[in-house]
Length: 214
Image: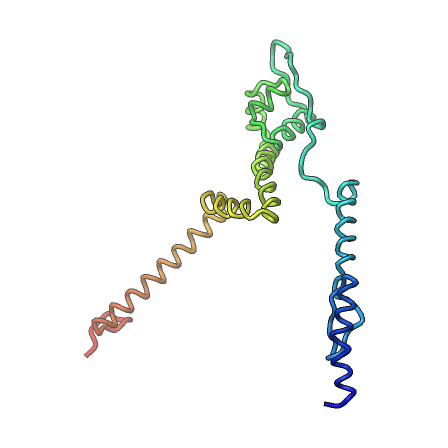
C-alpha cells in the first residue's frame, strides 16, 4: 500500500465521523468520500416540523374528520300533515349525516323528515340512492382509517387490523363474484383434466381415446 492510499484510508473514517457529528450520513462515491449527506438528521427534523405546521394551518392534506359544528342542526319540531319533499339541500344534508355514521332513520329524524319519504325518494331517484349508499360506505370506512393510521405507530393496532381483515373480508361486487366463479370453473376443469390424465397413465390407457395401450 502506498503512502497516498494509506493517507486516504485514514482520512475517510475521520471525515465520516465529523460529518456524522453534524447530523449527517456520509456516502462513498467511487471509493471516495462524498461531500453531500444522504439525508441530514437536522433536515429531517425540520421537514417533519414543516409538515406538521402545514397540516395545522390547513394548507396540507385535508383532514378526513368531519367537524361536528359543520353538521346541520337537529329539527326538534316538525310540521303536521303531508310529508315535505326532499329538496336538493335536504338530500345533501342527509348524505352528510350518513357519512358520519348515522342510520337513515336517525338522519331523517335529525332533519325532521319522515323516513318513508327518504325511502320513497331513493326508490324513484337512482342517483340519490347511489349517493346514500356512498355516504354509508364512507361512514363504515372511517373507523378503519383511524385504525390504519394508528397501526403505523402501534403494533397492537396493526395486529387488530390484520385479524379484522381476515375475519371480515370486504364484500365482492357482482363483477368480482362473476370473475371469481369463472376462475373456480377453470381451476376445476384443469384439476379434472390432470386427474383424468393421471388415471389413464396409471391404467395404461391412451389419454385421447381412453383405450388401453397394447
